[in-house]
Amino acid sequence: MARFPYLNKSDLAPEYQDKMRDINLMKLLFHNPELAISANNNAMYIRTKSKIDPRLREMAIIQVGYCARSVYEYSHHVKIGFDYGVSEDDVRAIADDTAGKPTKLDPLTKAVLKAARELSLDIKLSDETFAVLKQHLDNARLLDLFLAICAYNSTVRMLAALQIDLEDEYQPYLDKFPLPKD
Image (tube, rainbow, N blue to C red; front, side, top):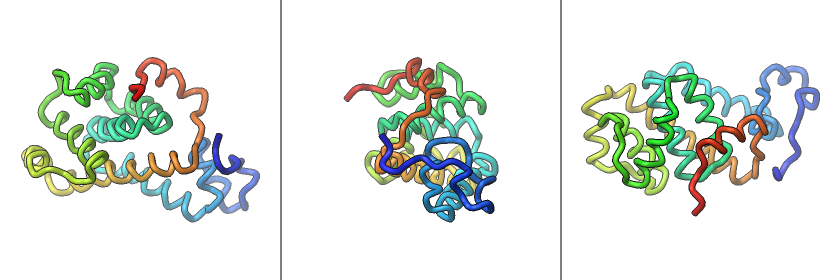
């Protein structure tokens, strides 16, 4: 159960009502409208203006959610990822790659996932992983990738702190692609 009540648009001052997206994360963040707008602007930059390939971006974000065992982030971005070229095999490959099992992923995608794991779990990026990424991505794309990984690490921590509930429509993604039970 969430630690704050979920707000509705009608609970907000008129100047904020059209800015709230209809997801539980935003319904809590709008207890501080300026924070909610800033967080949403950052997320929308990552989703719509980032120079990194959208499939790679979503794979990285799904990996962050997987590492954090964040039911909310993981299921939301599995769904979003499908809109940006992530396949069901890709989602399964994230679990396999994390477990050290062989996958059919290309070297760049494997390096993106490894970077997401390193930055999520170790809070540092190895020189080896950076070197592989640098072979494939220019500086602008590298920065956008690191922003996505780091921003969503922040998001999974906010989700955990606030104990935000998963919306029912995302449960099927979790059922089909379950997180490990540690």
